Amino acid sequence: DSASSADLSDHLKKLFSEEQLYRIDHYLGKEMVQNLISLRFGNMIFGPTWNRDSIASVTITFKEPFGTQGRGGYFDEFGIIRDVMQNHLLQILCLAAMEKPVTTSPDDIRNEKVKVLKAIPSLSLSSCVLGQYCGDPDSDHPDARLGYLEDPTVPEGSSCPTFAAAVLKINNERWDGVPFMLKCGKALDERKAEVRIQYKDVPGDIFNGGTVRNELVIRVQPDESVYVKVMTKTPGMSFNLQETELDLTYKSRYKDARLPEAYERLILDCFVGSQMHFVRSDELAEAWRIFTPLLHTIEQDKPQPIKYKYGSRGPPEADTMAMQNNFVYTGKYNWTAPVHT
Image 1: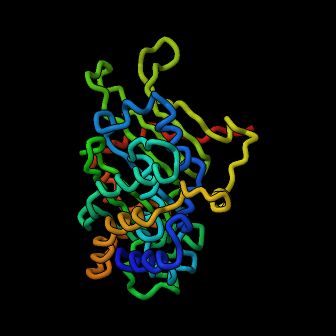
Image 2: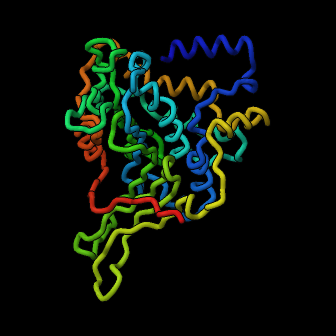
Image 3: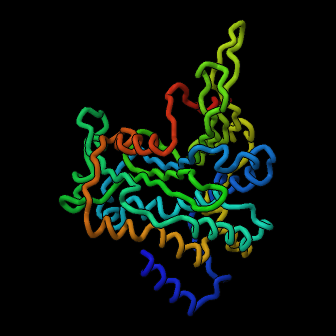
């Protein structure tokens, strides 16, 4: 929490200068996370619409298709919010929401990330949905038949969440009123990490409600890609609309490119003295400020998480919260990774 993080930072300050510290969040070493800065600030097409005037909501998602697999006792000590949301997803939010830095120097980039964090009020339980997976007795997989509480290493009756969804607001000129939703969980229906930017409805619709909101999706893993969901005319004689995508899938476009592992990149950055993809102490303090009140409430009040079935999308209440925060799900179209030859 904020206090223990401050104690650790104060202790490290006595031993090292800030320039000697490399706080690793391995998500900052992932290809598509690093690509966020290039996409945003290297393309004129995105800049004019990257704001509250055009964007309805931003959803940052992390899903794992497996449970604790016998390591629940370790997981139970910190839960899904500390494990994924407070660090990985919040770092992605910073890169998606920050203002354009003066240069690409590490401190210029980290200065902008800190400004975004300072504009985010601390989270309360009312802005969250907490879940805990239970077994699916009809599954053919033995792990899926076991719920979190059936892991022998988990304390009896634990209320530790294995799923969390939270809505953050950024109180600045660019993002005022735009919800940023962070979702993460274990034992869900797929493995996926992505940023989904959903644009507002087209004003003055002339297609009798046939349009669907545009989306820009940065898929972090698996199948690293960037795609834009757009409306186009149905091929042929018809003048109906259909949803399709402009797709940059790395394995198709860059067939011979080798994408280093996240830790490879970050360790190399340490060797060359680049702190661009590392977390600074003031950034860390702001991140904990946002989440500490929520974490203390969970630890003190022990609210019962909503049960969701192993292999599902998570608690339906999370989908309801998304809809209440300007995310529209149509279910008409699903992106699939191109087949690689």
